[in-house]
Image 1: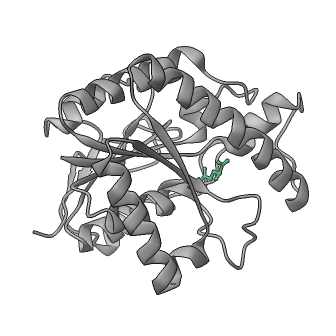
Image 2: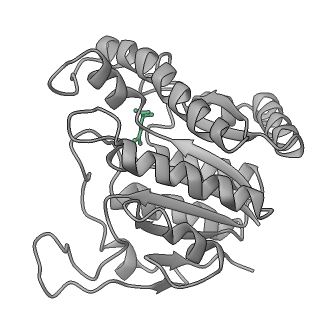
Length: 255
Ligand code: GLU
């Protein structure tokens, strides 16, 4: 199976912006094992800005664009250093791919992106994709990594996109406010009722929320790719998800 795994900022870092070492080590170990078992993996990783916040010892994510871009430049290095170190322990090679929205809208550049992705997979490398936040401003950015995950999954002709963040999946109501909220385990169509269940943005350091996750699921469904929304705090769940077991919310791609 070809699987795109998107890791949200809340999964990778503590609220301080510093790396969640225990979590990230486990994730890299499980992903390495899935690769060893024969799956092709592509990682879409957030966390550059948050890691920049942590590395520069700031107390919170800045609001102004130049500082965010500068922190992304700092944090992206740190992020790739961590992945390179952890995946190397299991003899896997990571490859950094930075994109903006305009890269995938331009047919020539999109084709270049696809060719590189396919070749990296043939070579057995693990592409690690993020938005090129240092140059991306609102006009040219994809804007959030849930959508970037869907773009990666569609362009890589993936079988599955896994969106890992700090929520278990799609609920019938906001579980932080409503104790009766129930997890929806399967979605076969994005009906207006399903779309109405999305709230606003999730955590303080991240960007996406349920709106961007449902948009990503919709893009994948149309391309015949399944999407799973799940909590990144149980890395071992990736084994069950790859095996087709019910974890979080699974959106079925049109077959
Ligand atoms: N590209 C951003 C970062 O690496 C994250 C965007 C997102 O979380 O959706 O910090």
